[in-house]
Amino acid sequence: MSTVSGASTPSQVERFVVLAAAVLESTPMEIVTTRSAFRAHLDAVRSDRRTVGLVPTMGALHEGHLSLARAAAAECDVVALTIFVNPLQFGAGEDLDAYPRPLERDLELAASVEVDVVFTPSVDEMYPGLQLTSVHVDGLTATMEGANRPSHFDGVATVVTKLFNLAGPCRAYFGEKDFQQLAVVRRMAIDLDQPVTVVGCPIVREPDGLALSSRNVYLTPAQRSAAAVVNRALREGAASIGAGERDRATIEAHMAAVVAAEPLAELDYAMVVDPVTLVAPDRLEPGSEVRLCTVVRFGTTRLLDNLGVGVA
Ligand code: AMP
Image (cartoon, rainbow, N blue to C red; front, side, top):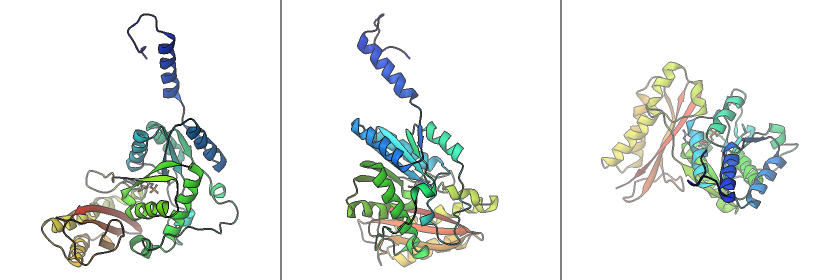
């Protein structure tokens, strides 16, 4: 590292600046496993007048997660990434036990994007004893994933509320990949006056358009190449809107037909919704924004994707 000026003998101030920069650069990532240590760490950050960027994840980190951490680092002084596979948001028969948990690799990836603190609690640490309280966001959770996975969003809203309460005032980064989750968390933070600014970040994709997901590892090679159809269906839906189609059911049928043409794919839903209310309009209004949302199954693996479209 060089000194901050060309003077041959660095001044006291220059030496302090260089030393401080070196200390900051070499600050190791801290790993905490208890709620009290996580809270104390971020309280100390804020009492130093530094800002916190929170990145909640279930681990098995990939570029999508890392893009959230980078966005947090660009806007906040300290990045706190959480890794917790939350049992409350998995339904019976879902992949809770099989969900990948490569903790060592996750910690290396987190360190590579300059995460400052990782909170990786056990289930017992997060839910000691009885958990009689749960957070329910109405309306937004009645459709799409909420209709397919009862109690999923109560599990999400409850764990995110706990993380917000532990983290304290911060900016929290969520991916548009889970578009309905983002809408639910945004609404919850407003409705409950949680001291958190929820920030949505764009979807990171593979070159063929498949959205990165921790669940992509479940796909066989044949399913993986067929999975490009998920994003293709959305893009074809968007293209039909671009060509003037305004009837919601026709656009949804068009997306469904694209998926149906792929033998390994089975459609759960393909919907056109308002991006804030998640209500499906009968006809698309000029000047409005809509979100095309789909879930497609490949064997037992459900892949989610969505795309925002402006209506001319
Ligand atoms: P998960 O670990 O799947 O719970 O995801 C943690 C966060 O990462 C959520 O806010 C997701 O929306 C976000 N995320 C997951 N995949 C992507 C992706 N491909 N691009 C952007 N964000 C993502």
